Image 1 (spheres, protein in one colour):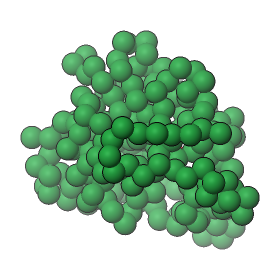
Image 2 (cartoon, rainbow, N blue to C red):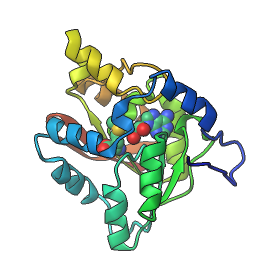
Image 3 (cartoon, protein in one colour):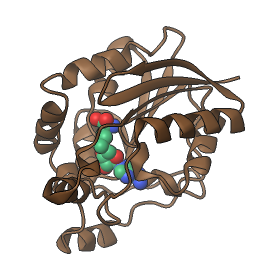
Image 4 (spheres, rainbow, N blue to C red):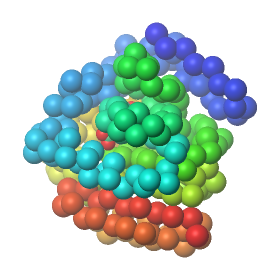
Length: 225
Ligand SMILES: C[S@@+](CC[C@H](N)C(=O)[O-])C[C@H]1O[C@@H](n2cnc3c(N)ncnc32)[C@H](O)[C@@H]1O
């Protein structure tokens, strides 16, 4: 069991007891408990090109980047890339199994609900992949914390989702992506994601430097002006 202490005041740490209760109640997605299951699903979603996806994303990490904070990291592909480049990497995730696994590999991984963090650690770059849909109710605060901590953000978000389809497949996808607070019903479409990013850029004096539409997901680089 991972226990977490933090020197930064105001961070609420995941309560292992409550989390255990959630798991026992079957409320937490299996997907976020087993890395092999998670990787299998990613391979299906990205048609066997999940590694290529991480490669495309890590290409966006410039040579001027010395520290990366990854929010909702899940897997350790970005952490491995950073290690290879001598970049300090710090990751935050709500999944105890993913955090334990990353720590066992020697990475600085924190078990944390990022919505409860008052601020994120200062760094050269924040990376958040495929996870924005977990925070539809407080995007303003999330983007504010991101740009207070970092001048740059690399974000990817799926815009073609199984969860958006109806019937059993849609229902199953929502349940599978439950990070602990119930089936995740919200998903972005291409247009709602673009509107959100443009609004956040205007609100926080940031600009969208690069955007790549990969069909299933959109990858953007945003920079504080
Ligand atoms: C769809 S996965 C994406 C994983 C990885 N970033 C990727 O793209 O391969 C979503 C991740 O967000 C984490 N997560 C969900 N809600 C979270 C929260 N409130 N705080 C921290 N992590 C969260 C889950 O545990 C999971 O690892």
